[in-house]
Amino acid sequence: MGRTRINDEQYQHMAYVWGLNYDMENKVIYGERSGYPFLIYASNALTPLMFTITTSAVSSFFPPIGNMEENLLKSRVPMLTSVGQRDSRITALSTNTFDLNTAQQNVECILSVLISFLQERGYIPCCESCKYSVHTEILQTRNEYRHLCPQCEERIAASIWQNMPSVKASSANVVKGIIGTVIGAALGFIFMALLSSYTYIDNVGTLLLSGLMAGTFPASIGVCMGGRPCRATKIVIAVIVVLTVFVGYNAGFVVAFMTERDMSVWMAAKTYISMMLAGMANMKLWTWRLAVAYVAAAAGGFSSYLSASSKFRNPYKVVHIGRYGR
Ligand SMILES: [Zn+2]
Image (cartoon, rainbow, N blue to C red; front, top):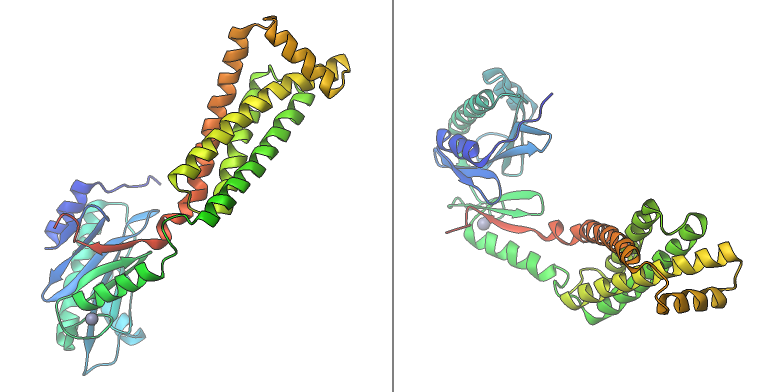
């Protein structure tokens, strides 16, 4: 089954048809209909046409939406998968479909049925926090959306910002990060030296694999131990990786001398260095191989840095939906 991706233009069109607005930055549709504040978003990336519809309202005459109300609403609008109420938050889910037009019609039907149901039962739109019936905006924290009045929105956003771990890396973290990077570099070096004692360092596969590890170990261990790295830490990590690859690459030749010519470490290192200084090596080939190891190290370092640092980005997301560009 092909996955459908909705582009900004299609989102914008749907929002227009539903009489709502589209927040391009956060890929959600929001706005008021018949006085009720709505937020509509794709339930998840795997089912982009299955929409979650939320609003916030309370009725002083009727009990909150439970099984009975859900069944009643489902009988009125079959394209409703589920609907429920927690406190003042009402959440409805449209059925999954693989066609954009059907999805658009499904949501339109759910919206109009839900609105008339809310009106029939005297539901009054309100803030999810203080329950005052005033104009609300939408605050996204992590993956949760809330309909809040401006005061509650500011208060909750401010308290989240306050309780957030410092965005700036502390000096203790810098030290930990650098220690982690050095440990990773030592592991990368050992890996390069060991690998070249089994297969020759000249081998492109060996170069790629050992370079990859020499980049991956320092970057991932450094970020895991030190947390969010500041710019200086990033530079230190990069310098350590560059040195590790250089030292590991040369150690590969020394190890080869040791195994092939049965030399001691010192003897092999001395022979290798004097051969290099005497210009006996093919420098073009030597440089080319080193470059291959560096490319692999850069790939390993960047990808492991990105995956290790991804945990610093999402958890602290605090977004005011629709406020972008205003
Ligand atoms: Zn409020």
